[in-house]
Length: 415
Image (cartoon, rainbow, N blue to C red; front, side):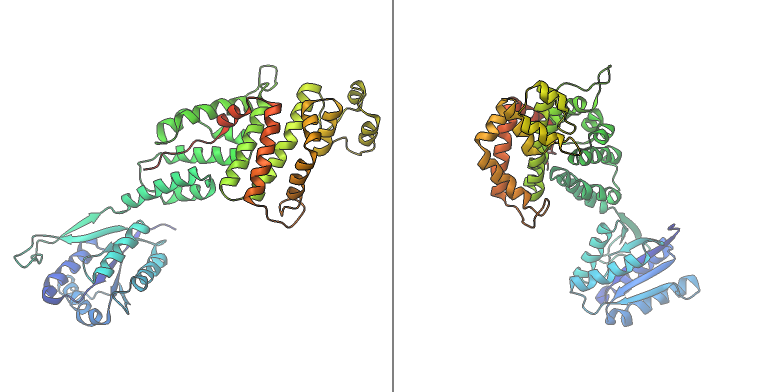
């Protein structure tokens, strides 16, 4: 819905010794803003003692009644919550149809402070009446002027800092919701949106979408405070994961970088106190380690095992029979490592040697609410599982810690 109409919200005090000056100032607001609707926020005393004089001034000047107004009674002019909710409700009522202007010249300190805060929170224009003041401090008649204040530029700065905090905390979905509230041109919202989309996709292991949104040059130029060195690391990692060679094949290190990404993913879940999520990713990492070794060293696809290849390697006949009897020729995590042991591979040997410890960890993973059970996993369980998976990952790829560094997400330096 368009907003071709304007509404003026005004807090109204009792006037006191400067009643005439205040009436002139408030009428000036009404006159010079020429709005379609006026909403007064006033106590019972002001409703009886001030608003009639404002309407009288309007009648005298315009030769017609002030009919396009409504009055919201404030029961307690010193109760912040009460005043905040009264003004907020009117903002929410009219903001879709009207452009709202708020005047905060008059009223108790709580009334004027709340009006200014509402203006900042809801991105309305905020105005005050200024002019030449006499020796009593009152604005002289005929000198009144409207002064527009832009408070929400400061609110935007808070939102921008919050946006960067969300990114640092991997809270990408919440961060994207802030874009619509930021009106400042201090940031390139398109660049930030691509940044959040890229890392949201990476956090969900959707590297194709990550690659579509990732623009290291743009992020460096427009996303102030972001760790550029880590952006370079990520650029290298995402290129290795996504870019194919001329023959259609991927980089030889691709699988290792994906493994490193999942290990970082697990760590991010741990940092967010989501231990079940983190352990689920560690489980996948442990499985992927075995699958990578089987594929790269022996040419065996754990998702579709070639029986003839097992026979060529003279694998134990009982194991081959077990695979033959399966409708689908894929094998489980445990069978991955059993097969590696049968191939006399160091990963399989390590797994067998530490079988009881590893199986215990797999058991509490299986009992997780995110697997087959109803348990919630703990910080300590994650740490134990993580240490063991890293030990096995280092057997697979001795420099895996470097790859983990390359796939770690950058962060903003916050003010």
